[in-house]
Image 1 (tube, rainbow, N blue to C red):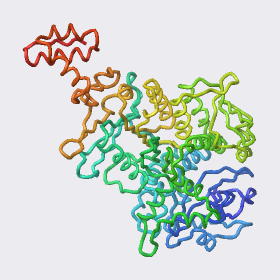
Image 2 (image 1 turned 30 degrees about the vertical axis):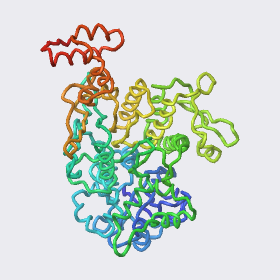
Image 3 (image 1 turned 90 degrees about the vertical axis):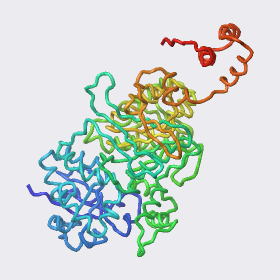
Image 4 (image 1 turned 180 degrees about the vertical axis):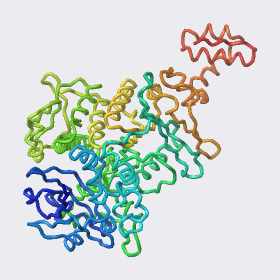
Length: 577
């Protein structure tokens, strides 16, 4: 049976079986199609079969030597009802397409099966199907600046899209990413990950830790990784391409990009003498599209390979109330995703979030607050409020955040639990399959037991999304939960930042040993040691000193005193663990 493709301008095509391409703005609240560096190439794709419609998501479709693919469709297509039949216009010598997200290919596999998914990719001139034509396509005007602008995300889709659509994609058991292009003052460093669940002791290794004192360059390294994945910087080495970078940092001093800031940098990178980028370029373009002063939705729609989670909102303004609002908006985003995708996946993002939060917070239901003060109750499983969430959205007061309810009573959360309630919904809303999550010093607001819970929750969330994380931390408690080959220690010596592994197994090791050897506590002169130095000056022997101070100090202090005398009296000290 022939697959038919149509260009349609309105949702009036349910009697016309086939695949319908509509500009991205239709029925989405925007008056204009997205202008992507002077190219109009983004389309919604819907399948109609027997009067029933399914959405496959967004794809970019570029026609060679055309800045507006819509005009090519109108010129080359055949008028059919209110649509244009573009089946014959889709030829790989004239057209190339690429999905905007990886779920597109999963939907194809679910809806069409392997054989018809392959036919579909061939007919729509999908770049992952015609992978061997990449170098030809890369010379087409507009390919790099619009279709392939998204760097690592686009590369991931190009390399894996077809295999996902036909059900043959398998993740690598083990892989690593190496940073060789940091500034000259940095050693190259490598992060190791493992999906090998046959290791019954350690299981999968989906979290790496980056440890180092303040000022060694941890944040610089994290920003560099994000820039590579988001496409700001080119990839010079062979990486296992991640689809998306999700950055989380709740320090008032962090300086990661928001989505809008990243868009400005991408525009500056791609600026040409004919189309220079100004500081207001993104705002002007977005406002023209929206007809309003609110550019957030468009930025989020077209930089979906990057997400920022922290104290700054999408306008880059610092706000202590934004995390509360952001978490509530994330709950809505999760519910909307589940509603739109239930037809092809049984995996509920809301249920996954619910289960993850319950690892550390004992609650029965979540609640959102309406503007009139009444509550919307959300249970884990089938829930009338969740089914009506699209109509309830205008009533939600996002500034109230989310509430946790146990036995009919709203829980008073600790500061650590509040941090969970801010961070986890946002991560659950943003992390896609094969994402890399970057977290900067999450222990800032957490008790050590909560740090352990955070690692546990992250492992659970990452496993459900087949994703990974790199955490910059000063936490020895977190290091105890991670195997040594996934821990990198940074030290700044003689003007250079050196990277090394701990040199001992950190998984399950004592916190004292981790602090001493991985965090260099053994190398640092402590204030209590200086106090002891002054105190023992008045004693002639180790026995006198220990007898006098033993009842008043801890074991580490006693060991220090013994070691101080041993240096001079040739005393042999035996350490027993």
